[in-house]
Image (tube, rainbow, N blue to C red):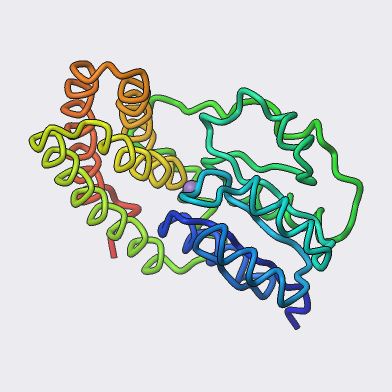
Length: 251
Ligand code: MN
């Protein structure tokens, strides 16, 4: 029986489905698409654990946490799920009141172990997972596929990657259109989503190119950002080709 209930708070659709898929293998869960929804849900029900994304529009994870704690209802552990780029001040998350943190891109095994530990109310080892995940310069990290295979049927995994490609191609198209419209700062948002998805799925060269593009954008270097976007497009096309040819993705 799935006796423990987890609230998943995540605004990125692919990541949320990914978390639901993993958590749902073992526990029951509900989801919130943003901080506001999380506060509402946590005000109505006691969960055993809350997974809280940090970067969300309007009410971010830190504000949602404070609000939930001030409502005084949910005393369960709240784990921050933070993007790779937010890592510079991890201790800040603990100081803000989170019980633990998981860094994105997440890896299924580590992710589930951390949740399990928190649910079992074991002492949280705050020193674990403090090393930055090394993103190898490979087109695809097959260990992600292997880990996913433990929890999913091959068709399900194939579908996740198909959806990724479909969404990514559409986001990329949006990027080029917003640049044409003279709004390069909008590109950062789209590229941020591509980065998050690619990181989660182990599509490393796309992840690295997206991270670079996002960094140029955030630093206001829009010329370099455009060049980097072309590189990102190439990496996406390469992965598309790889997906078509690679044996592990064959139906
Ligand atoms: Mn987010």
